[in-house]
Length: 296
Picture 1 (cartoon, rainbow, N blue to C red):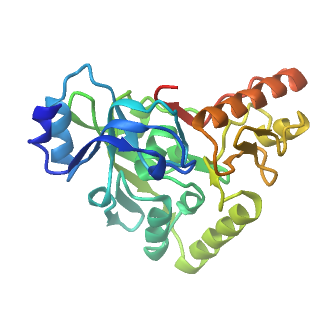
Picture 2: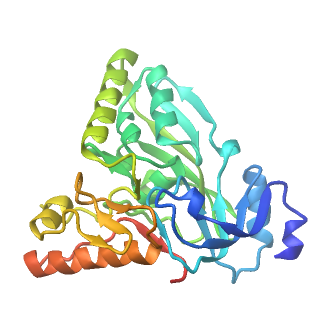
């Protein structure tokens, strides 16, 4: 790794804290944190990196538990150079992998492009949306994605059409170690005023129903078929449940909170206790939606 450091144009840091970069504000650091200057910088870095070194992408850190032992290998964070958005035609936007959902949906609104409003309700980046098939309010990324550009772990740049991504609920076939650097989204023609009103309604709904001003990680568990995860958690008596410094939100049961002093181990253990209680009460096994990475 030391020889790679002299060849990058972006920022490469060793033993970099990750807690400040994730919503839970907990967990260990990255063995290496790389913020590439541009796509070519990322391509060269990955191409020259020992193939045994693990690589993972970090977006806004909203859907993530970084375990207390930290993340071995390289964490790649796409900064401002990857937040650019270009309008290709009257219904299509090309978005950098680091562009936030608010920026993408606001750009679409201003361009009179409808259908991307739901991205206003997802705390993440275009790259994360593509990888997770992010969704909210009845829509998901597979409904609007045309194609995505990925830098594979080998350093190869590829462009995959929607069909190649193998989307299912909150899942894609984006390979481990690949970084989504660009996404092309297509909506439909609409009036900016109507699009803006829909975005405002989504923002109000989130504010009213979710603990947005807390240290949280977004939706903790996937909704099982024909069920809502929050309702199963509530029925199992978990609303407000506390373990260590972590709590099940009283406002929305599918959100876990760091009350201020929680370790990542507290948060993950609380999630597992919720899973255990839901299984005992309903016979349904909840599946984690939040990613858990690193060493305990």
